[in-house]
Length: 335
Image (tube, rainbow, N blue to C red):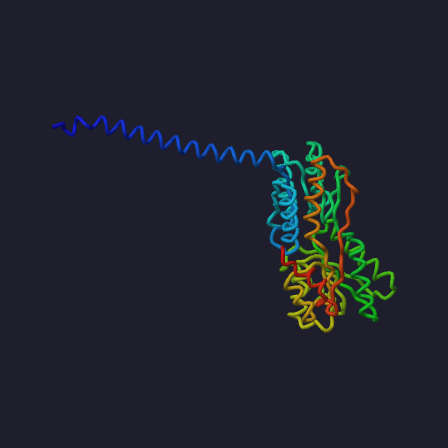
């Protein structure tokens, strides 16, 4: 009869063999997964979309359009944005990270027309094509610009204000970062349109941090200092919400008309209940989609039809908001 001691070496050897086989199996599985992942990375071009925000309805729609195009064109797309719509320095860091990561293209919306220019020039110098969407940057080397004609959109709001109010206008403009090109273009368009009528008595402007709370406070301040204001231009989604809430809380919906930009469930509700007179609605989904589609064409050496691509702008009021085509525009269920 063999002792337990005499069987010990065989147990040890068998255990070592089993551990070795297990380790080999794990290695094969990991290696196979790594190889498959690597092959996907080789097949897909890496591009970056850098927005102003990842929380507002506008930028969620941009990201949705970008994802749809990336899936269609087999691109590895990353959507990134700073926590604050004032933080252009964070955007610059994202641009430089894309350079280090050897992105094939950058789709970009500038928080600061001048403050983002140096980092964008660095990307272009590194051979990375840049497509600007929504808000421009001070750089001649941008390959393509895809955006609303913001000046004409501002004029659209101003012309509607004149059409809806035959009296003299006392105007308050609730704008965001003064260094953001699209906000300044919208303001200029609105101001030019109403001034040309000869019916404007005064125009007062406040620039707010691009948050709903700041817009609320700015609107209340304007109305406290200038209680005769009867028309307000609120020039992006968050300015629209803040102004609308201020008008509601102050009980001025019957006395002050707000012409607001962009749409979400809340601002559409305010249009329905009267805190907002009209919405200037852009097409952010198209901006995201066309930005990524344009990147694909550039990466693959295709000639672009134009270096400027315009996206649509529509005026929405209580009289047309229930039309089928308008409903599809303001409630983008696929986003």
